Length: 190
Image 1 (tube, rainbow, N blue to C red):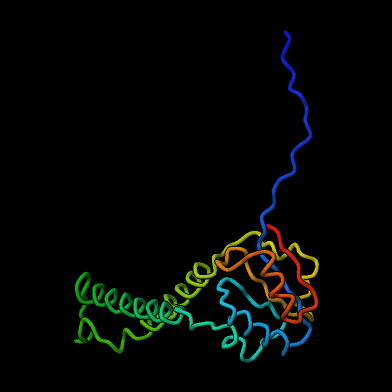
Image 2 (cartoon, one colour):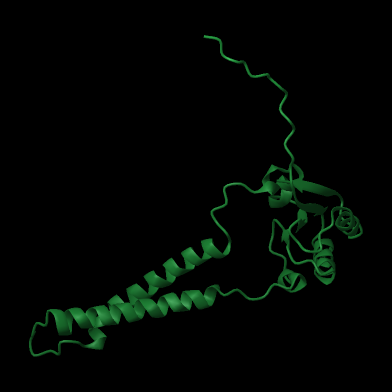
């Protein structure tokens, strides 16, 4: 049986999308000053990567406090509520047992379980919210393929402005980052 053969053509080169632009710094003072300038320029989707904590960076970046503590508080309150209601239901309503004339429900006797469930619910709320708020798990990040960026955990500081930023223009943003005094500006592709 004769089957038609498909012609073999060279694969077309796939288009890569830009993730953003990366600028490298060697000194803490330089990256702190540059972060203030990036925030002042109105960029919204950008980040600073550093091998050490930099005091004052949150203010320089304009980072607002996170909602995570409120979520953890809600988890803790839910835990203590569930614990008290669960023990009240079990001891006073569902299966009441008279032991030495003690009341069916007594708050001091139920504190240990309430404490443990408060901690459990708070911890679970913290971990789940941390993953959700950070968009994890993310199995691949474009920055991790860049050879220059691999030094962010040892001795270099980086600012990355994402292409998803409303103000991002490849040429203008590159010129802006070059004006910050960094050592190198590179395009990161997805």
